[in-house]
Length: 410
Ligand code: AMP
Ligand code: MG
Image 1 (cartoon, rainbow, N blue to C red):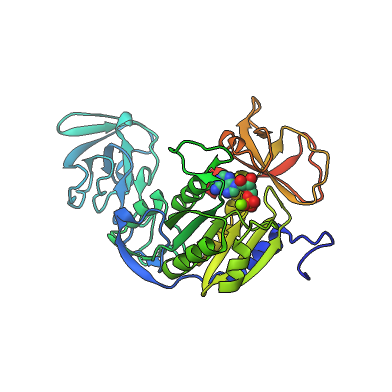
Image 2 (cartoon, rainbow, N blue to C red):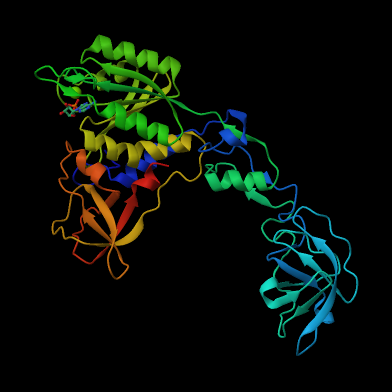
C-alpha cells in the first residue's frame, strides 16, 4: 500500500485523511425550534436582525446624569427628574438633573454617565454624588455584544447551550439544521449475550453496543440499533442489507480481523466494496472502510477499548463531517506527563489517563491503569487520552498532547 510506512501500517493521520476525504457532508435541512436544537449542526449562517443590547443601558443600580453637570472636584447635588426601572422607556434627561436608574434599564437620551449607588446619598428629590466620578462609566453601549447585521454563527457550527442563548438573544425561535444522520450499529460475535441475561459458558456480555450507542447519542446521531449479529455469512449479510437500506452509515464492531470467524469483511466485499486498513493505532489496528449498496461502512475492531478509541479518533470525525459539521477534529491540549514511557511505539498510542491539577496548579496527566485493548475499566477511570506519538518516548515532566473525553464526546 503506497499510503503506508515501512511497517505496512497506515498512520492515524493518513487514515483520517482518507476517511475525511471520503466523507460527503449531508445537504438535507430541516427547521427545528431553538429548544430542540442542542447538539444539532447549523445549516445556514445566522445574521442578527437586531443589535444586542438594542440600546445603551445601565450596568449598575445608580444614577444616570451628564458628566458635564458634575463638579470637577467636590460633591455634586442634582435633582432627581425620573425613575427608570428595567423595561421602562426613559424620557430625555432634563439638563442639570439625574435619573434614578437600575441595572439593565435604558439610559435616557442626554445622559452619558451612570454613577453607582454606592457613590451616592439620596432622598426622594435629590441625589448627592461623591467627588471623582468617571465620564462614560457604567454604560453598556448599544451593540456591545452584537452589531445589527453581524454574523453570529456559521453554517457547520454544532450548537452548544451558549449558542442557543446567543440565537435567542437575537430573537431567533426556529433554526435550520442538517437532518440527523442515522447510523446503523451491528455488534458481531457468537460469544455475545445481552446484559440482563444469564451468562452461559463461553460467552461475554455485549459491551460495545452500549459504548458505541452512547458515543453516537452523545454526538447527536440517531442510532439504528441492530443488536447482536451471529458469526455467519447469512446473518451478517442480512444485517448489512437491512442497515444499508435504512441508515446513512453502517458501524460494526468485531469480525474484521483475519480469523475465519470474521465474516464482516467478506460480506461487505460481496455486497459493496471494502478497504481494510492496518492503522498504526493502539489500541486498535484493523479498521475497515467501504460501502454496502452505496451506504458508507465503517468496521471497528472488537476489543472494547479498541472500539472506544477507534470510534473517538477515526469514526467520530468522519461521521461529524458527514453530518455537515465544520469542527470535526478534536483539539488536544498540552499537559505535563506525570509518568514515563521509555519505548518509542510503532503504533500511536491513546493512553487512558486522568488529568489532575497538582499543588502548583499544573495540569498533569497520570495513567489510568491497564492499557490492554480488552480493558474498559481504565476508560471509565480516565478522563482523556494522552497521545503517545509514533516513534517518540515520553519522559516524566515532558509536555504531551491530551484529548479530553469531554472534547471527544461532543
Ligand atoms: P473480533 O475482532 O470479533 O475477533 O473480536 C475481538 C475481541 O473483542 C474478542 O475477544 C471478542 O470477544 C471481543 N468483542 C467483540 N465484540 C464484542 C462486544 N460487542 N462486546 C464485548 N467484547 C467484544
Ligand atoms: Mg468476533
